[in-house]
Image (cartoon, rainbow over all chains, first blue to last red; front, side, top):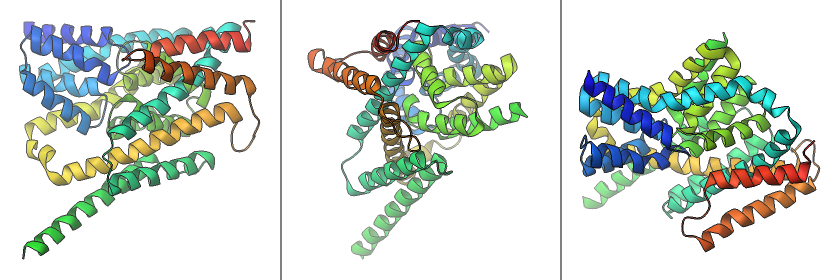
Length: 190
Length: 188
């Protein structure tokens, strides 16, 4: 029981003191879980980061679930996950109660018109960062360009195509190219 | 009924958001707009609020939207729905198919999805900046203060990287943009 509480409170702290979500949380998770508590090794932490990147959902949740599971099984996973989500849940719940009234104040509304522009810049910046990490090979670049063009068309012409469809098609194309590559390799060996 | 929509909407978000918070924004935007939960403007505001409050941005948005649509039960439901796929997948992966994560085919599919998400988020960023400056495709009109603000904020944000190695934190940019907004659009 005591371990469960420690898991909950450690991840509560991580959830409370990291701004900006996702990747911003990884250094603090590492400091608490690897350096201070010795719950997992440094190598496991690296694996978690890779796992979090290749599984869907908030990265903090992926990490919390994994560490909790390692320490204390399913109950530990629940304790850590609830812990990491709980602080932001409470804060946003509070904000939701007064945000609409807050927006009716004239200067606040003006401030948010400016902030909206900053959000556009932040999103474009996130896209550029991901672009830099994309391998400069024919397949990923062409998938990227097609997805970008499709998404612009969807936005500007208000088409009803889900980005999930785009993602599934991209996954299927990459998978097929990979399989085709394997087959030609085998053929070449014969 | 709204509870079912929140559940399905955020399960979709939780299940298909690869690669961090900003990668999930196009999908969240699609879900939120299709159910009419928030306007495009209000969603941008909430992205800024979620970025400036602690915790995961996806969770923050889920809690806010759930609460605004259906009170505390809605907040609990939307947050749980956004978190559940991630939780279950990590549990299943560590328990059952560790090998799958290392397989070449899994990574091929994943790389495809990541390339797709990168394209999608670039398009979303471009769309948001363009519509902010020039209005929508239907009602074209140049918004001069917005164009000036966009140019100035982008110059400051990206210029900061030349001066300091870590550049400017998103929260500082959001505060600057808020102050600039008050100056540009008036305080009464």
